[in-house]
Image (cartoon, rainbow, N blue to C red; front, side, top):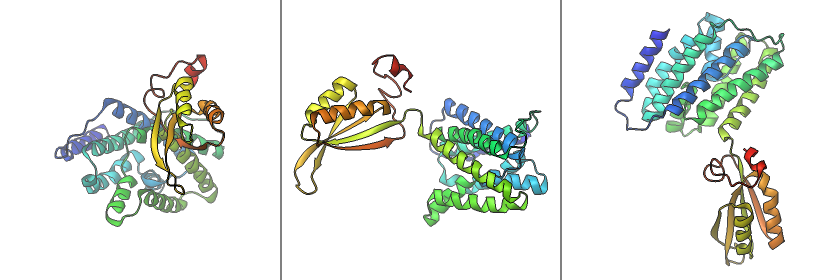
Length: 312
């Protein structure tokens, strides 16, 4: 198995030698490896152990395991090699390396976890199994995607359909998952399929949560005649940067300034107080910001007391 993985990586090195240079970061490879290990752990000790299916290539490997007794560690690579060869032209150098690395790491982790003598005692509770698989596998996959990784498979197929047929990737991935889950009924019953759907929902939610990042924020657009007073107080009291955007009224066609500021969720109430204090008729639009990076969020948080030290 180890020699097989080495050959797979060597194939990847040969394939990317003609691609434009893109930086490969150690932290990306590390986090992709951790993500693969977590996903493989969930697949082995929750999905396989409790006869739950899966979508995508992982679901196909579980079908092969049930019908032909093929180890998912081997079928993962055997299925992905031709897909990577077909789709390598649509991937940049970094994406291709990360895809080959992610596929190889997932296969290796599946091989290792299946040989670890560990049993998670859930006493046959399929709901706990579905939740455990969704949380652990979803967090692992979210981590994998967050750092630019992928395990190939249906992602490559979706890219090809998007390129030549104009079909959005999300739609293709959904259709492929549905087809794989329907085929999985050849080895699991309706009850296990129902819990598999619960697993799939939890998995998707955890993946989205992980990808959104820890530094969620709120973007606020304010339209007010007293924009300067509001801007000054935001910068003084909240110590947040403010952008003034030139706008025009759709009805009056009068030019006016609009305020745009990004704040932490806990600061939203104080921001509203500042706006109401200066203009009770101001128009306010609050936008969910999945991730805010930079000064005041991912680093250099203004010190406004002990509470801010635990905000994120």
